[in-house]
Image (cartoon, rainbow, N blue to C red; front, side):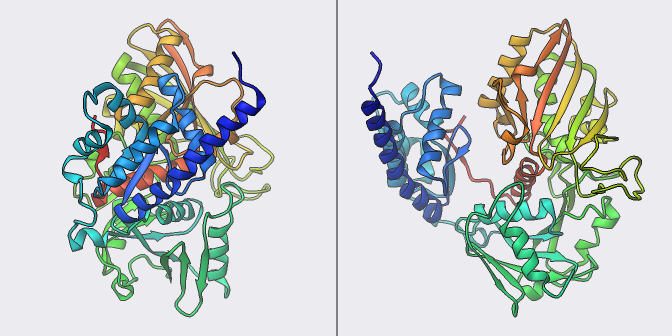
Amino acid sequence: MSQTADEHYEDWSDRLALAEAMIPIIGRLYRHNNVVTSIYGRGLVNESAIHLIKAHRFARRVDDVELDLADTLPLLQAVAAADPGAASVDLARLNRKYRQEGGDRDLTQFVRDELGDLVGQKGARSAAELRGQDVVLYGFGRIGRLLARILVDHEGKGDGLKLRAVVVRKGSENDLHKRASLLRRDSVHGSFQGTITVDEQANTILANGTLIQVIYSDDPASVDYTAYGISDAIVVDNTGRWRDREGLAQHLACPGVSRVLLTAPGKGDLPNVVAGINESAIGDEPILSAASCTTNAIVPVLKAISDEYGILGGHVETVHSFTNDQNLIDNFHKGERRGRSAALNMVLTETGAAKAVAKALPELAGKLTGNSIRVPTPNVSMAILNLTLDQPVERDEVNRYLRMTSLHTPLHKQLDFIDSPEVVSTDFVGSQYAGIVDGRATITADNRVVLYVWYDNEFGYSCQVVRVLETMAGVHPPAFPKA
């Protein structure tokens, strides 16, 4: 029997009340315990009651039923009562594990057993751990500002990644205010969620409690970061000006710098790291690359397909939003075709992403070709993977496999799957995934498959960069429930 309008409203009000009760607990766990909560990867920190309800509804894509807030609220309360140390807790996965393996234990005991040695460990960290990892952004363009937003949002108690400074060339007398304004407002990603204050005398930007020193320099080897209280920092070079080991090594000449991460494809022997795929290449390497947005988008999908079906060869075509290196209207450009108006044309150009795949997945070396078409949209791109496999495959089978891979494997932070007849590019603005497989578009024929992969080439890529940073710094909190 269907519900009446009044019953629907009452049900909605009850869910809102449960979500509102969860918000302060989520906040206290984050601020006091450095515990990050989520539902199947959907973050809950600093989110509204409506967002929490939507995250619970998303669970039906995994479990075929909507997650009940009446189940997750007591689970969250049990986590808070355990007073744990830093951790990442997925409430949906924890709830499912309790239902499957909880046995005769009550919820409180189950949570304490699951958290193990972390129970009661709030604040039990060394002085070095509490200091966190200093991060400097060298360049403050599209990627630099998004990295700043993510780092500010993730700072928590300050025992993880700490954004300490940005380095730029001074553009005008009111440069500091212009930089702050670009951080505060973004035409694609919207307003900064919080407050921003500028101190002209100290040359700083205060964003949600994170004090960011703005340093002006034209020379990457000339900055003394220790003069600003910065030490052992990772410099994230967002300029793309230097892409080889020799050029990026200039940063290491600066006092206070220990390592460098490039947010562009690295040249020569520079390791290109795709988070979730080849973090083992990080080690103690002083200079690394986080590869390109396209490489990050396609490598997780290629890894999944290669592992399950084998790849004989293929072609990657990217339909990519225009970028700042193109001209707004026709003018001289050293690159072929890129001098033509980005706002008026589809522009055929090259991409090194197909070749760069081999640095993360050596088994695919020489097997892929690639090209790119720049189109008049400001953000969100698509990669079309036309692959020949080692074996025949059916459309429903490959879609089912990629969906399960996105939900239940270590690639769940990199890979998402969607099956909707209505989604378009703007629906993926702000996606935290490296790539999202569009299941409705999948095509198969014998041993050939064509996959369409959406990706937010700005924000999704920036999230991948932060994941590489976390691995470099060794600040990944343990995740619960354990696999």
